[in-house]
Length: 114
Image 1: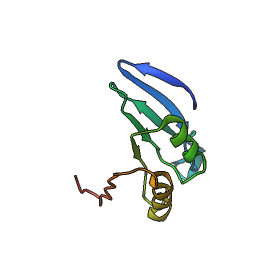
Image 2 (image 1 turned 90 degrees about the vertical axis):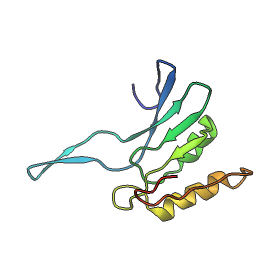
Image 3 (image 1 turned 90 degrees about the horizontal axis):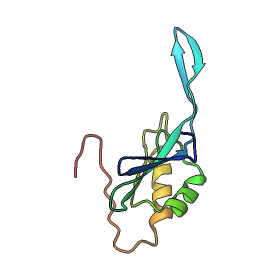
Image 4 (image 1 turned 45 degrees about the vertical axis):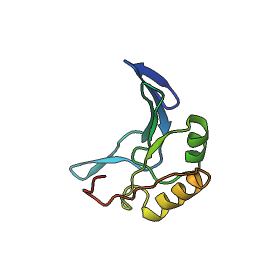
């Protein structure tokens, strides 16, 4: 499956989306191209939709992914070395959720559980 493609596996439907970051593999000091980053929309039984952004920086098409697939839950990477940092993740979250009434946002710290 390539970006933009969808597959059904059992009762789940997966759609591969774009993600944005560089990727290489160090092989004894030699860098090799590591492939394309990707995210996924996961449609679960019952209609619940998850957007797993994958390893990515913030990029404008995230807005289109939100509008097109309307995920119920978005999982965004926040690491600030290889992915977007807290500032970029917070910007995306604020823009995409400002019109959602009753939304609860949980900002978890590493290792913390709900």
